[in-house]
Image: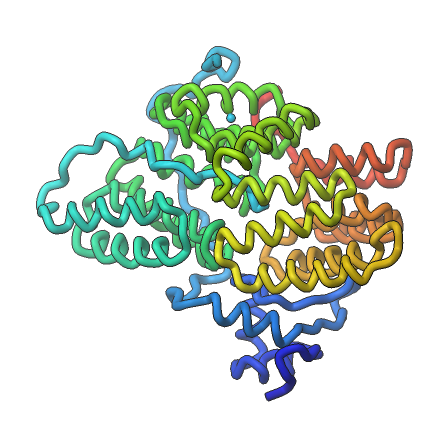
Length: 452
């Protein structure tokens, strides 16, 4: 072995040796599966390291996943809508993560309401139907082991019954959720989700599920807000009673700072599925992103009391705490999220962060912020499509203007465009009047989702 369980392992070659794999494999794992490899901000030649304890915890929590898909999911053609797209100003439905969180936070954690009524498929026998229904239950539970089971079951059914559109839709949802609630990387999960959505659309050209899955991918992967908006508006036109179509559309609108439109869609989702805790969690995040902190605090407090096992709320609360300068609260909520989702690597990290915080005698928690920022930058720079908005937010909350400008300049050099309205709003407030930071943020702003 390269080192003991608490040792620091330097460089990709040594990390690969510790895990018994080649260098390219561990680089891919860091990029696609969250392998905990750390680095400080820097250029392309930056050094990397890992902690043996974190690698062991990550390996213990992986289980068995299907082979990875190609690094970049193929662009699937999008059929034109059967009818003219509705005017958004006339499509208002009055009456709400992650992440992920950010995904990255909330989004998609509720019953798959888009599949409530579906016609029977020729040749779809009773045994296949029973397996399909059980797989849908597995998907709805949003737990990593059950998602793996669902993906295996639905893949087998889709192979045996390629003409059953709801199976392809369910498989698309399962892969999308495996990215958020399981350990599948973006390239793998989004590529497979897009392929399943395309298969569903061949059978059902107006598939609401396929459109909203592709809308998520268009926004978070391809960074194409306008196309994402078109897909979601078409999904809503074909399925106005589908709460997830409204909810996921609300999520991207909130992320992009289109607050009034986001609240319109949150209201629609809440009306269609009143009291659903996962919708309310996303709604709370939308409020926070819009700067309505007091209202968001109320929603999160209610959810934390009435639904203490809802991990997405802990995601949100960790970020809210950091925005308020409550570093101890950030660590506490991060540890609770790790416990609820049974994420060994995150549990190890949050415990280590807690020890750093205890030993951090400085009043500004500089050492703790440095660890948080190092991790944020590492995960970002190992990603297929980097988005430094979280790293910038951490640097801003730490009050480190030099690090913040370095992150912003790196993001601009890479051609990034962000939504991240909640982060951007807090960065601007923290550095109000700083022309250089304001200009850098302006350059990173992405296009609108809805026409002005």
